[in-house]
Amino acid sequence: MQDLAGDVAAVMERLGAPAIVIGNAFGNRVALFVAFGRPDLVTAVVLVCAGGGVAPEPDARRVR
Image (tube, rainbow, N blue to C red; front, side):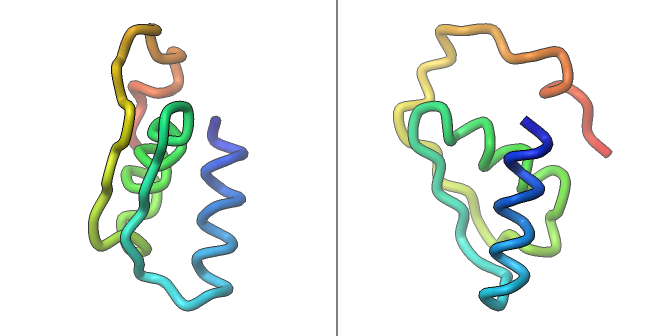
């Protein structure tokens, strides 16, 4: 998950962050990892279809 969030953060830096991060379904976890790991790049987070029916990975609870 951290690898995906790192990739998103790298693209955001390249495109000229900060930005609103939108995560749909599985992407909501990626969006949260980006927001918690790189708050300097994120102005807001929108979570779509974030049902929470599946327990998050253990790493998802860690905030740097």
